[in-house]
Length: 142
Image 1 (spheres, one colour):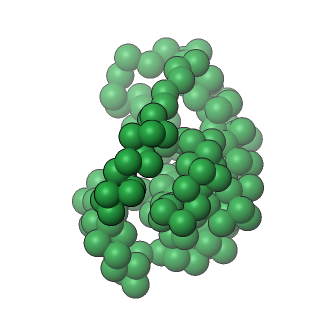
Image 2 (cartoon, rainbow, N blue to C red; image 1 turned 180 degrees about the horizontal axis):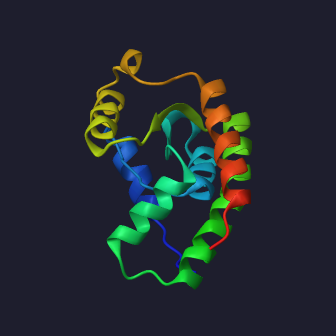
């Protein structure tokens, strides 16, 4: 239910100055950015190891009702399909499996520094992880 955005004029100005913009966006935001700035995007898909891990992480943070968690899982079901479409469109060039904060941070740093040989670029493997997550989320009942 929350809508966020980054002003396009700001992004355009930063990119024209030869600088980088790091955006943390959902898949629809990534698609939108790709459509407007295709030459300036290095799309990184960050995926969890499992749906159970997502539920555990959100629950441990606290402050989330069962209804809100169900809403988030419903959003996840929709977004998993959107991720497939975004991969097909070329939005993502690499992906991170968010097993641990430390490893994910190292992977993100490699990507930012342009050292893509150190990160997962096999988008076929990302698709397999998406399939696994889709199966898991369809079986969850809270």
